[in-house]
Image 1 (tube, rainbow, N blue to C red):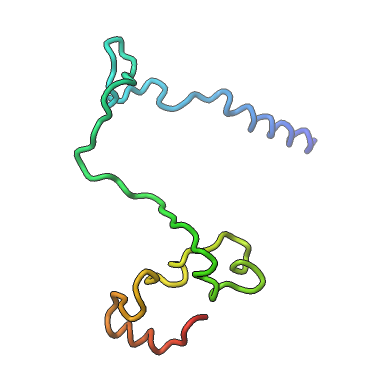
Image 2 (image 1 turned 90 degrees about the vertical axis):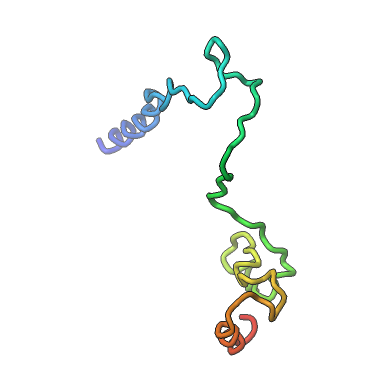
Length: 119
């Protein structure tokens, strides 16, 4: 009986998307240029935004070359867990600034100078 219930549940999961309607099927966006017969005009001029571009979202920098982060890597793997190489900013947020010229406050500089270099 339990096996039959599991098969029925699996069949319902597979069949459920087949009978659902798509959302916004008849939504007509007023910003889309249309021809006289109401179809979208694909040869119309590209609309321009009057405001600033929206740059929100997830931004991921490229992985750093192994030569830049070699001192931080663990001997048993790339970085211990087998994931992708981290960026240089993972180890040092101020990696692009020359040493001693980072834009930080003097009291923070004093705290950083007390720490031993590297891991």
